[in-house]
Image (cartoon, rainbow, N blue to C red; front, side, top):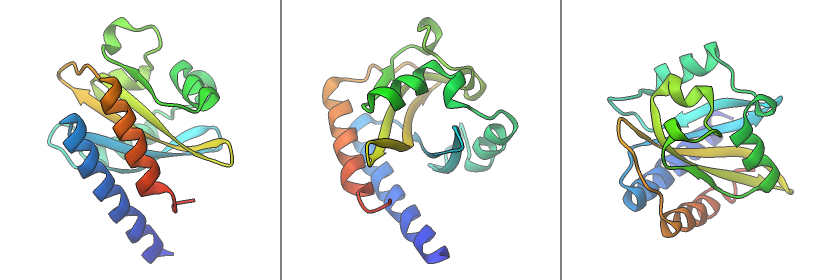
Length: 150
């Protein structure tokens, strides 16, 4: 089982590098959806938000799909959703502010017509205007790299 996790981490690492090339953003995380909430699995290690802090804060502040409008939108529509300015968008989740997220792109990982996981690409400490081309490329890369994950 551990070897499978290592392979998944390598796939995510490669995917995150490609996403970074597209968006120029460093903070990228992968969450599985389990029991109606986000379970943090893997993220890029950055000076702004490290992996351990990310997992700890999520553990102390669980994010439930039913309580989070933007996650409901992602899981219902099953397509990427973005917010270019979290401070001025009513869909913003409380968790965005815990982590200092200014802009976010959420890519759903859909299997058997159900969102099993999400990839969050975030700008912290600065705004980022996600373009339609960035969104399309990130969604395509996610599908390509994660096709065998489930």
